[in-house]
Length: 368
Ligand code: TRP
Image 1 (cartoon, rainbow, N blue to C red):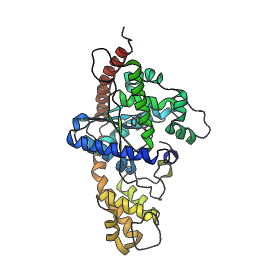
Image 2 (tube, rainbow, N blue to C red):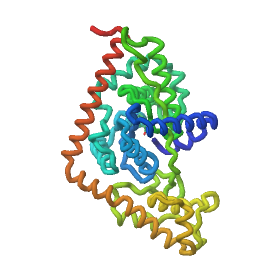
Image 3 (cartoon, protein in one colour):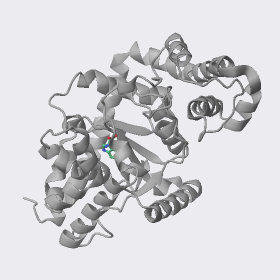
Image 4 (cartoon, rainbow, N blue to C red):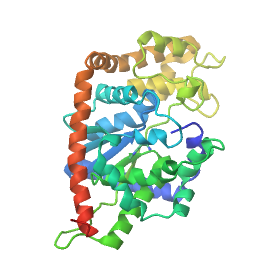
């Protein structure tokens, strides 16, 4: 998502609906522990740049955990979404391949997880046509994510794809009948839109005679409870601010960035996010990289000052990323393998999308 959008969305979800979403998430977690095979997860990203530690702690770790728990996991590389609010695709092919490398390097296993760019799956995209007939333009204009993204583009005219991208996202989720979508709370309105599409499809067309159950599941959001790590300047992590550590960076580049991180003049290191946001964020970063409590990390550094803190952050982050970076370097040296992963992903997604589209045609009485 673009700059400022997450800020704008922060308050779009009421406390009550957040509490509901948390309760649903807790139930899903219990369900995964009991029987992971009852779920299919779909998540995804726009290929707009390289993944960084914010993505790693915020979503990638969670995906890997879910995959390892035995849930059928699908990851869409949303290449069409790149052109919702910009004129060109940029170096899209390279970015898609790089994103796939990041995924595999962090532990998404192509044997278990289906990774695919949605532009390469025609039947998925065709679902957008019937789905578009189920929503109104007023509804889409009210969608908080569409509104926020539109506002972030300045006064640029809204493209038809930006207006309708929640419907495209519904196609991403429903084509494979995913019933869980891991989300940050800013993405909850999207999921609501997807459920609305599934409900209305059911109400209007139902299921072909003789078949059981609804055509589409009602996907639920699985909220990520990870602490949000800020950028190295204490502001929201964003590529354009240059305050992030990308997974693919070298240990030296990482050290250099952390050396420039903003701190304060109090030598006593503490975890006190309200009063000392920058220092606390660095403490949190080291703690998350080591899988420890921030207070314990702060205690350990004690009066060591910003120098000792930065040294510890650098070591912890580089240690954590070392195996990921090594794996990524292997993948970079073997682009044929990565393309093969995408081709297999596209094949699996196409098979699933064609089966779903056939059901939709059946339900709509459009079989010829
Ligand atoms: N919109 C998401 C983003 O901006 C990417 C995405 C596309 C997605 N389709 C999805 C996420 C379906 C979850 C489910 O990062």
